[in-house]
Image (cartoon, rainbow over all chains, first blue to last red; front, side, top):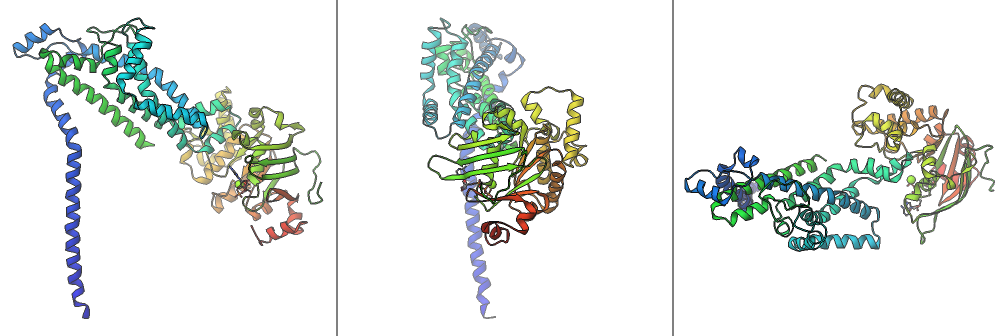
Length: 295
Length: 261
Ligand SMILES: Nc1ncnc2c1ncn2[C@@H]1O[C@H](COP(=O)(O)OP(=O)(O)OP(=O)(O)O)[C@@H](O)[C@H]1O
Ligand SMILES: [Mg+2]
């Protein structure tokens, strides 16, 4: 009964705590809003301005000429045509890059994993880290010198793919090595103890066990290069038509966005194309997060 | 040879002057071991932690070769053939291994785990033959009744004890001559442990079993011969019954009576 003031102290204390909790909660809410508002604003803007241009022909027709666009804009209509040459070009270029970068990146990643702590492995790992920091336009220049000038004798999808594959490499190398490190060594030993040759253990036990880690890395690498513009300007150039020839100039969605930006009649197409690209990248990101979470 | 080490006639395995060091700077983890192992029997390897039991066991199927720093000296003969001169792939098909922790392949079903030896090696056999091998191996490890309706579920969905029996099934599916087991029951509860023990007793009719164990009563229950190792040395080797009732070396006696270890 002497402790009559204890409850009072407690209430005071808890009132203070409740206040602190509230302040903290509001702090978190405000910081979250600040963090997500750019992405919300960007997507909002793209949807707002771009969605009116997105229709069937957007995905099935090639880019309109300036004249067609001008006529449509003058009469207040939706710009005709679409960006199918860009979409297919992006698919072609990204597909080629992936074909080049995935096997090479996985092999190097496996090599680094197998040679932990070795001098030359550390050297390769550092080089790969440096490669990740090389500005993409420089990679574009290199692909220009190697491929455009010497291999395809002109602007080509292949040249762009080489530049983008080099961009993908460090990401795939790193994710392969990290994924392999996560796989318990006992699994490798279990395979070898069955008399399975080493390379088959890697192919049939380790890679399948790490498949989700590997595919996450690959998807993130692809979403990383999807929007690259500068290296493509120096290598694939662009093409108003659909092109499947890897040695010929090829369009890509980011290249089209840049073209539209430079043509006052096509401004509306900037938004729809950006919306498409953004949606694509976002989807890949979500898929890779899903795969990673499943593991 | 030391008086504390029995010699077996016509051994399936013969270990000769085996010494192993983990790297150049290290002292030997296994020192000049000479031992002969009886066919179709369970041989237990006992000794305090760190005495070199696993190191010795892993030399028998040349697991150490995965790690280039490890130095292995001496020879091991399987039915008179020097295993150091064999192809490791052929060798490991003759000498199977079961690990301390169950390690079924996580991407494979129970069925595929059992025939993993064939599948991973790309050995083609008829479906009916595959089914037979799976059923026979799982029956041998007393797992068939528990899993026959869920053969296509992932092996990792099984309980720890079931997983370990699956791993044993995986190693016997290939019909090796020798099975090496490194503390196969240390991660299991008593019931699962006794199932695995029963299984090993049954399996010795067809296979030679070398078992590392920390559990002296396990060695006493199921093994015919026992080794006692201490600080890398093979201190004593002989009939398990003899060793438990009348150990020849003082260290063995101290260990078996729980004075250390
Ligand atoms: N990978 C390794 N690198 C270096 N030394 C090792 C390695 N593995 C084991 N050793 C050393 O080799 C010796 C024998 O180890 P080993 O694993 O064979 O013992 P063990 O008898 O199996 O012990 P436990 O009963 O604890 O499993 C120990 O001194 C240990 O420190
Ligand atoms: Mg051990």
